[in-house]
Length: 583
Image (cartoon, rainbow, N blue to C red; front, side, top):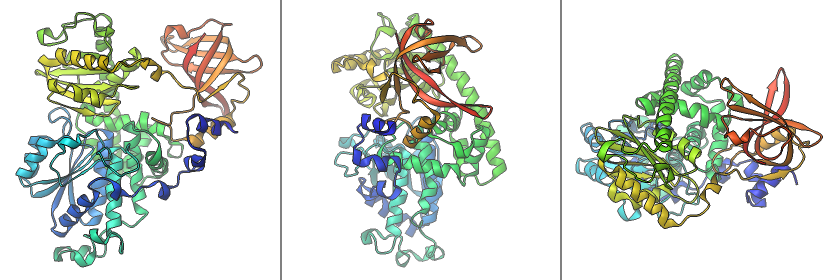
């Protein structure tokens, strides 16, 4: 059995699925979009919009997934004869999801239909208002949803709805938007879905005569949208398995030769060679730059980058996003220092009587909640991730501005943030998300009460050994390093794309002898470790590791590592990134 096969076995991929896992078949992995709840209703309503020449507004979220989902529909729907316009809410003045002021402004236009992408599943009151003002709404979303309190939309397309027959539940928002386009394709293909042929040329209104021969998107052409699906899926940190793996696998191939000037420019500015692109580049290089727009300003710049056909303008926008991303890093680092200081020194009550007033120390609690006045709410989600990783506990970072608190949380293991938010909703004005990430809004005076409530909920679950979920799990164990070759690392690329649910393979190296320990970097806070199995040796790196990782020369250690290739002056060698060390 090869090492790649060992890894597939350790990850419990059924043997009969190995071939398909290593070589995804686009057509076989794509499920019927009409298995999604309300997809037929959505298609019929869009058909009506085409027939009546209605103007349609695509209302998206401001993160990468939302911007990509918005671009997918704004790009593709005109090919079906729709007149569309995108609306991107401002994170700082409007917040996440549909909001009443935006609904009112859209209703003042001549639009008759709103399609909410990557949001809308919990926007009950806002959609009621839309209906009252003469707007109908289609929701195409993937966030947690309460089937007992569905919004009064024409259609609520969400794979997480109870009773959904769709075989795959973990689509990103961009994936759901893509399925809507696939459904429209099916509805326009002659002889298929006769009950849904609202786009059939014989049924189009007279005002659409000029479109009769061009309405629709031929099968196969939708694949050019997969660059956007891949971006949204990787950056929204959903499992890269099943249909998501298929979409990202082929989306990366499309991204390598993307027709979008904006994405070509962004790769150039980020110094990415398109033919070497991986999911890691999407998650850690392209994604943060696209996200920077919505985190520090508005997401409209990112949307414009994805939509523009002007090469010069695309380059200018890409450079602006690159600069914003640098500013975003500076801002998040500043907040991280302040937040960890709040935990480490228990600077309690820093928000006054309406702030955090814990008496037993914040860092001793099971769910960490830190809050600060004036913190930029656009970057607190990243700070929450960093705190979670540092303290190995679920964490919320709350920004307080003008008496209003907005928080972003990150979790792991068995603590589901979406359920935690639902269980403490009495303290909140708004909240929702996924198991691993969520957001809340509340009055600043209620932060302390909510913090206690979310910790009480955590304790009620009686969870055990949660920190073990953060430890790297080895795919295979070795006592010799002779087999860790450049050829092996190249063979491991068959398992890509890597991401949540399909992480980069982890090798446990047992009984390695430490040959050299070097502190590197300007501040000597990074580690270069050379280990030997007695005959061969390899170098491994760790950036800003815990102090206990700086082991002594001659010690015997066990290492958990990812393998990488280092290229220097035309020569390739294997190096590794240290994930954990024990002595």
